[in-house]
Amino acid sequence: MSDPNDVDLERRKLLKVVACTLGACGVAAAVTPFVSALWPSKMTQAANEPITVDIRALHVGEMLTVHWHAKPVWVIRRSKEACDELRQLNVNLLDPDSLVDQQPAFAQNPYRALRPDILILVGLCTHLGCIPNFMPQALSLGPAWEGGFLCPCHGSRFDLAGRVFKHMPAPKNLFVPPYHFLDEHTVVIG
Amino acid sequence: MKHFWRQRLPLELLIGKNFFVPKNLNVWYVFGALLLLSLVLQVITGLWLTFFYIPTAEQAFGSIQQLLRQVPCGWILRSLHTTGASAIVVLVYLHLLRGLLYRSYRSPREVVWLLGVVLLWLLLLEAFLGYLLPWGQMSYWGATVVTNMLSSIPGGQMLATWLRGDYVVSGITLQRFFALHIIALPCLLAWVIRLHIAALHHVGSGNPSQLSIETRSVDGKAPAHCVAFYPQQVQKECMAWLVYLGIFCGVVFFVPRGFGFLMDALNENLANPWQTPSDIRPLWYMAPFYALLRAIPSKIAGIVAIVLSLLSLLAIPWLHHLLPPCLVKRSLKFRITCLSVLVACFIGLTMLGLMPLTVWLPSVTLSLVAIGVVALVLAV
Image 1: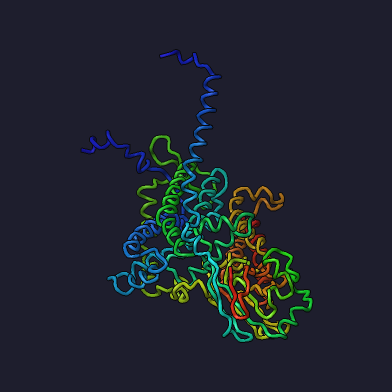
Image 2: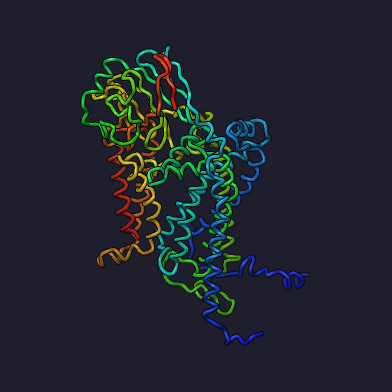
């Protein structure tokens, strides 16, 4: 055995640096499978296919909820008056012109829809993910209420185009999913 | 025989040497021992629940109903566990209040306090994870709201998806939370509790008169103003255990639902990912945080407020340095008044969190928070 006082400190330092670096690489490599296993599996990802919805039976003022991507999607037929109401500039809305990227480009209009009468939204509050209640009746939530959505969890309010009002916990308008119409009565979501 | 084991097992290392505590410890000093008892009970009843519980979205709810209705004494096991969870939170708050009242966090016991705060966080997390397991409506939407809180930070949406293993809370999330609830968090808790107790034994217990008492023994005999932990303090704690178990069993057998505070009737509806209940209510011990979240009309600010309220407890051992010199000497009476105001504010916030949302609620909530913070700062 060599003399303990006869230690080459430079070599020792190099050994330490190499050991620590390789050790860190090893830990990173070892952690990888543990972290990646927690991502959504292939099966979960596959549940993300477009769905076809028949809206023939949907009357004015009614809402249909369909399931897409494990999320509720609303299909609502709005009345002519409700659509006209949406066109008027409402100063109480946080993002009246839908500038925040919460919709496909085709829905960046006052109706937030491809066709003014048909509204399609992902029915999850942009605050913490609860499902807002559909409150179409005007005045049901006070004198200024023109109909819209109310989140039961933290009280966020949205108008009939899913636009959030100012001073609400929700920071963004409700999300409009990508969709297109096959014909007048059939819409494909996704 | 004794000799044989002593030579081969470090018994003293395992159970620790007998140590000494100040002789004037009053009833406020028993909550640590009560917490230890409650946590052991939770492990035992929890183990028994896992014999019957099935952690899948299809069967979780049903397996608990079966435990309640078909398994002999199943309802007692379940009640012991749900009541135990609430009891632990009550005990933690009383334990924490003792710390504030007698300034247990002051030098040299800062680390004991810090570890205690970490334990509070872990316990709240453990309670939150466990609350998803019955897979009722409140379980489901509570988990949805809390995991979505992450989405307010940059990249948080991805982090939330990673944690849930799905784009929304689902059976995959349930299985994950189950594993964390029964393995990861209990192990972590056990370690931090060990550190908390080791730190306490290292610096010695504080005392109600807030005098510096040397608890370390030089010759193995009790130092001045001290008694041995075993048997003197242990006898007191056994007495406290008996009284506590009496009250606890009273609740379990006569008011197992705790007037809706321990078990919410809404949670007896199967989780429905397509319908948020209109009358949503958090569990009572999450209610103060829920009140805060509802009162602040901004997503990120609401979540920052909750995180700050939990983090700020870490600053308490050093907070008194910030006070102006005229407030350095405060009478015990004055501090008790401040702490009473703090407790009243906290109870008020809990009640507000359980109420349906009204117009005046946010302003009342925020004023209670402001009064509570001032009272806390004046009491440290």
